[in-house]
Image 1 (spheres, one colour):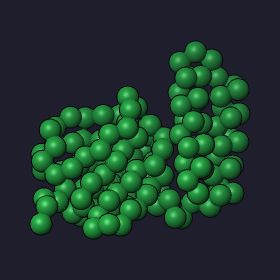
Image 2: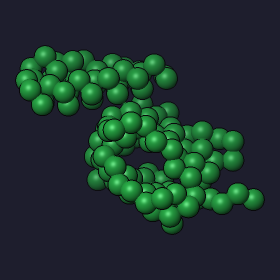
Image 3: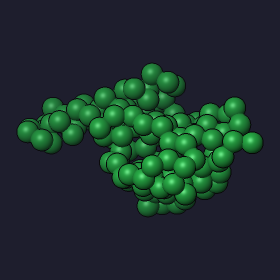
Image 4: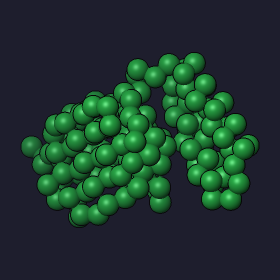
Length: 130
């Protein structure tokens, strides 16, 4: 049996997941990355997008909006600003979030404009998977 990765996904509201998995793919602010057991340690900021958890042939996705990933040889902990099981996100709610993000982009300038554009892009990418 292959080594398993200890994974924990925590938001300010609740711990959404804690357990052993095969792999986790994360939308990092500097690019997407995958984490397996015994990964080299690093920390990364997370952008809006979908986290994919792979375990024994099953994929589970979470919508995440910001946060940090702490990768250690012993496991991965994600501290999310907001996270929701993707199957619990309705198309209407996501469309509303996209409309709000488009308005925020229109109202922003400078660095805030870049942040708003990245947030909007992440939401649209998630919308394509629904």
